[in-house]
Amino acid sequence: MAVTRKEKEATLSQITEDLRAARGVVFAEYRGMSVKEIDALRKNLRKENVKYQVVKITLLKKALASLGISTDAFNYNGPLAVAISNEEETAPARILKLASKDQPKLILNGGVFNNNLVAADVVSRLAALPGKDQLRAQLVGVIAGPIRGLVTVLSGNTRNLLNVLNAIKEKKA
Image (cartoon, rainbow, N blue to C red; front, side):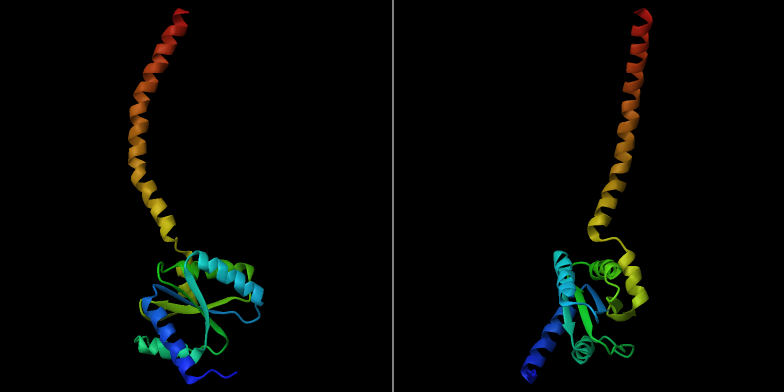
């Protein structure tokens, strides 16, 4: 069944809105993957609130152009899926990069970063960055470090006093 013009326009407006609200966008080629593998990938992406959608290239080009993103370097011609995160810039890249280790047929082709098209190597570098939760944990560790050191120093005097008292006790016993 052919897709009507109204359906294409609705899809275009949906893609445009998704891209407008996106903080992280990654393009992936999924040729050769089974439906079961794609569903498992979608499930993993959904856990991180990342939308994964197969998109026609012409509609994607129009959506990018309507957002003012230059499509001159956009030269994809195979089946293309778009992973979009509204919460975290690195989530789509990180999850897809991890999935591509198990699924070699999943190829990261590029993405959008700071309203510019970026190549696959930039997406790979974004995937290497830690996520927000990991960065928050590191920040808490950095903040807690001096406090932990102060507690250790202050407890050292008490520990030394107890060692001296135990030594005196053993000497008298």
